Structures are given as C-alpha cells and as structure tokens.
Image 1 (tube, helix red, strand yellow):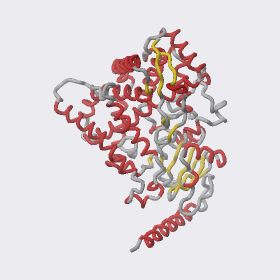
Image 2 (tube, helix red, strand yellow):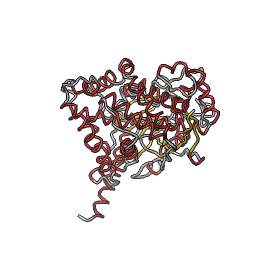
Image 3 (spheres, one colour):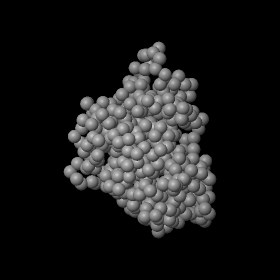
Image 4 (tube, one colour):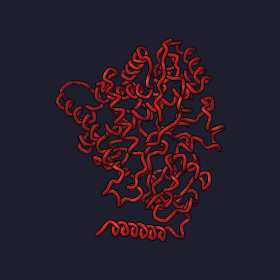
Length: 479
C-alpha cells in the first residue's frame, strides 16, 4: 500500500467520522460558534496564542461557544456566569478530564491526581494531599521551613549583582517543597541545580500545553508527528528518576525519625503504592513550582512597570513591619495592598490561561444549550480576567480594584478562579497563597529594584502555564 493510498484512506475516515458526528448532533440546541471547515474544523482559528484567539471568537459568538477542533467537539467558557454553571452547578457532569496525548508519556495520566478520573483512588490521593501537605495545620507546622527558604532567597539577592527573579523564586519554592516532603534541599544557588530542574519543568509545561495534532486527530497517536510525547517522556523520566532515588534513600533509612510528608505517603494503604507516590511528586513539583515562581515574576514585573504600585506596596510594608525586614506569613492580615497586588497579578496573568481541560461523558444542558457527549471543555481564565462587563479598564494593572472587595481566589468568586473551582480545584492554592505574597513582599521590602538594561519586556509565551517570554532580570539595591 503506497503513501497516497494511506493518506486518502485517512482523509476518507476523517470525513466519514465527521459526517457521523454531525448527524448525531443534528436537532440538538448546540452552543453557538464559528462554522467548521471540512476535516480541520476550526483549527485554523487558534493561532499561536489560543487563549487570545478564543477570547476574540467569544466576543463574536458568546461566552458558551462550540468549536470543532479536528475530530473533537470543544466547548469554550469565557465568562464568570457560565464558569459558575459549569464548575459549580454541573460540577459532577464536568469532572472528567480530556487527557492530552503527551500525558500518556510514562502512563502519567493513569497515576496523576490531576488527570485521572474521579474515583476512589483519586479521592485517596486528593485526601493524602489535602491532609498531609496542604491542610492549615500542616502548613502552620511547616511554616518555619518556608521562612528559612525565603531567608535564603533574600541572602542570595544581597550578594547578587543581578537577579533572575523567576529562577530565584523557583529555587525558593522548590526547596520549600522538598523540605516539606523529603526534609532536604534539592537545589542550591552555587551549583544552580535549580536552574536545570526549572528547565525541565518549563519544558514539561511548554510541551504539554502545545497544540498537538494527535489531540485533534487521535489516529495520529502512533506517529507522534511533532515528537511532543517523545520529548515529554524524556522530561518525565528525568524527574521520576530524581524522585525514585530519593524514595530509595528514604526506604533505606525508614528507621530514622523524620516525620515528613514522604514518611506519611510511604506508610499509606496499598491503594496508593510507590508508583502513585512518584507521579504525585511529579504533579506537585511540576505544577507547584512553575506556577508559583511565574506569579512572583509577573508581580515583580508589574510593580516595576507601574511605579505607583511599587511605591504604595513598599509604603505599606514599611509602615506595617518596618523597612528592610522580611515578611512573615503572620503579617498577611495587616498587608491588604500586598494581597491586592497578588490578586491583580493572578487576574491579569493567570498561571494557567485555560484551566486544565474538562470533559463531559453525557449530554449536559447549560443555559439552554446542549454540551454534547464527549466534548472537551476549556475555561478561558485569561478571557474571564479581562471581561469588560466585570472589570473596569480590564487591561490596566490596578491592585486598588480589590481594596474593600470581597472577591477572592478560593473558588467561590467565578470572576477570579485562577486555581479552578469545584471538586477539581487545585489543592495547592493554600500553599501558593502563603508563598507568593511572602516572597514578593520580602523582595520589595528588602531592596530597591531596577530592570537590568532599563527595558522591561512584558510578552508571554503560551503553554500550560503563561510564562514570561523574556525572564525578568532585575538589579537589587539593599535597603
């Protein structure tokens, strides 16, 4: 069989499948959306920044929009009201996941608490995370570990001529997590081992977030045409090897009293075995380090871009805790403007521009429209954070909009849900909302800052996380 015959056979199969799907949907009151082209559907409308392209399309077709991306029906949510319907009213119906082909690397989707379906094992893993890592009591007990890591961050900045803010925040977050889970520092500033780990994690987020032909035409999985799954397999393998060796070391020293998270996880029932623990660590370190450090970097960039914001934040810090002192978690209730600065950063630069995609297993009616069975569902947080019907001058960075406002990020106010909502809400939000303001406030209160070279770039690159295209490099002057 020659190549031409194979190509025509595949095209015929796609057209036939499309025809069957179209017939099945006929007569249903589907959400509005742009008309699809044969075979590719609406793929040509995505562009290099899908979050922006889909926001523009939502302006034309509405906040609940149906597209055809290759062979997949895709519903896009672009307003707080529709997000509330999907993530609260119909939370159970929308609780499944669309698993990108790339996440089949090392069978990660089978063990990941992020990607596996809601099940008894998923509940056990979520409970293990919320009880042993992210509960208020556990976070309070480990506060001294995070304080020590932020002290290390400030000490590093005091000796540095120029600071790569994202990388420094990444190292701090990484060591805070590894001390909580393994009772060790995984990175040190001298060897810059955190830099290598950051490159791996950034690679994971970029590859996993890339538009992949396999996700639109699943029959291409055997070819992996862009090599995304292959590259992600390499990244996953490196991280899993690191955690596997750390677990081996711990198992050899089980008689030692460390009383950290790893001891607890390894002592759990057989439903959560060593493989689950390794992939749980991959989830924690890939998602937790990159999103937290990216938020600190964006917040610093916005403070440098907006001198009035910088001035007001530094004034509040000086009045409340004294100039040059490190911020502690206990100071947060007395630093409302700093908290507003973090919220405004999360609004304008959500760490995950599309919340992790959902999927419906059966037809679901939302606001009078039928979301058809098998559809993947994108919640466009980037668009919701810029909705002019909700936010005054939505493109402006203005932390004051949150002063005297009850809007919070904990999944109840759907105009600001950077961590998601419902049963799939990110369990790490409690840690992130402790780490980010403490790191940011300590950096602002310990130094005066200026951008290296004087030119501040604010472009971003698309992936699962919305990272700065050019790292923020800033010059610190100790106060």
